[in-house]
Amino acid sequence: ILLSSALFTAGDWKESGYDQARTRSTTERFSTTLSQRWNYTLGTGIIASPLSLDGAVVVVAKSGAAAALRESDGSLLWTSAVGGECVATPSLAAGKAVIPATNGKIYCLGLRDGLARWSAPLAAGGTNLSSPTVDANNVVYLGAGFPAKKVIAFGIADGVVVRERTLEQVVYSS
Image 1 (cartoon, rainbow, N blue to C red):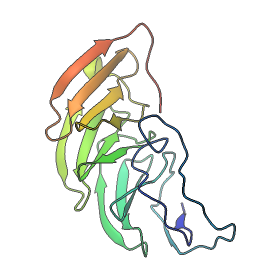
Image 2 (tube, rainbow, N blue to C red; image 1 turned 90 degrees about the horizontal axis):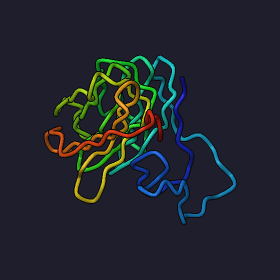
Image 3 (cartoon, one colour; image 1 turned 90 degrees about the vertical axis):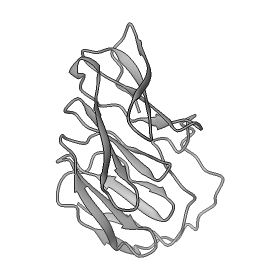
Image 4 (spheres, rainbow, N blue to C red; image 1 turned 135 degrees about the horizontal axis):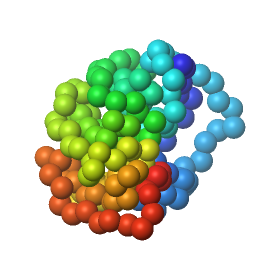
């Protein structure tokens, strides 16, 4: 799998859809002439979108591998493995990478070192195909998926559930 960065530098894109409103757009203008600056092979299928925050690009692979690369030159900052497949885009906030996995858990790694900060199970072992979002108070919101039908809010500092809500529908979203 090839991950590359063009000759432009965008602002931080720290979660799926760019921001909490999922606008999927930025006001930055880019050159129409692009060329590859660097690439990195993670070794397995990548389904989730890469994200960028504070000069680091974070990418996760279906195998559960996670990597952070220096945005400027593509050099490897760290690699880590979570305990399940990663098919949803993670979120980056407060110096952390919050990574959902299909094994019914959410993982939090340090953005600078890739070390595990915490992991938390989803209610009723729900599978997770949803991308989390992080609010201004550093609360992580995530759809718990089947069979849980819940949205769960975790504190980003410690992974403690601060609230959860059962819904009528299964939550698979990004």
